[in-house]
Structures are given as structure tokens and as C-alpha cells.
Amino acid sequence: MPRAPDAHLEERLVTAALCLLDEQGLEAVTMRAVAAAAGTSTPTLYERFADRDALLKGLVLRVQQAMISAVQSARNAEGFVKAYIRFSCRYRHRFELGIRTFGLRLASGEPMPVFNILRQILARETAASGRAFENLALAVAALIFGTVEGMIAAGLDHRRAMDLQRACLSALKLLLAAFHR
Image (cartoon, rainbow, N blue to C red; front, side):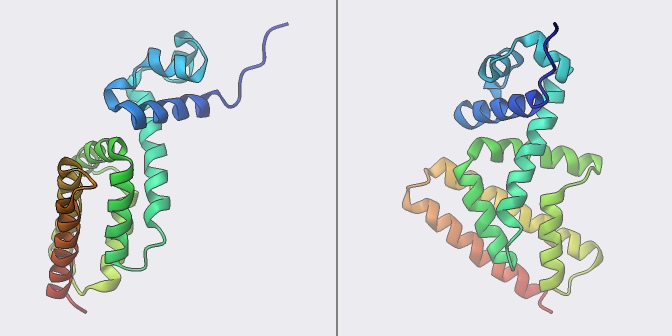
């Protein structure tokens, strides 16, 4: 009698890919490594994901869902920034994947749910509109991205990492004040 298909295999594969990403970075997320980590064969993995790009799309969705969970309860822009930095510093390889994805989605016009949460918060807190609003949202995103990059490079336990976070929050306040309601 043939084996029944594993209804949870796709989930296990993405979970295995996420573990590899967290532990070793994006380069470690290969089809062979993911199959082995999930306890299945490479041909079985290819039955669920046509290629590495398809697997990475599933991984990006999982990372995006986790980031949404991390920031969605933020009541204001400062809370969003703190939550985003905290998550990104804890999961630096997820952050790297997210930055890569952000740029691609921005260029192609694809949906960006985490960025949209930031935009909604900024819309509540500022009077900016039109092009000025879009520039503000992108400036805040760039500020966050640069801060996280700098904190990771400095070493998260280094005092300068905290200086970077404080400077980011000060710059955020200045940006928000420029568009105060």
C-alpha cells in the first residue's frame, strides 16, 4: 500500500529552512541541506518547491509573518522602531533576508506588509501626505535599516550599539516633529 502524502511536509521544509537561516545564514539554505534537516529526500523537496527561489519565497513569508507579530502591537512609531530593532538584532539573518526582500519589493511594487504597518502608524502620528509622506516612510525605514546594520557590525553587546539605537530614536523624533499633526 502506498504511503499517504505528508500534509505537514511543506511546513516542515520551511521550518527546516528557517532553522538553517537562523543558525548559518542564507547561503546555508540549499535544497539538499533543507531536505536533510527536514528528514526527507531532495527529490521530495523538489515535489513541494520547484527550485530554491520557490523555497525562499516560502521562507520570506514565514519571516514576514514573524516580523508582523513582532511589530503589530506597536502603538506608535517609537514602539515600532524599538520592536523592529529588537527582532532584527535577535534574528540578524532574517533581517538580512528582509532587507533584500524589501528592496526587491519596493522596486517591483509588490506588497510590503511590515512597511505598510509602519506607514499606518506614521499616518496616525503625522500630517504628512503625498510625496512627503512616502519620503518620510522611506526615511524612517532607511534609518531603522542603517541602525540595525550598525548595531550588528558594532556587536550587539558593545556600548556603541546602544548609542546607535538612541541616535536612531532621536532622529525619529526629529523626523516626526517636522511633520507633527
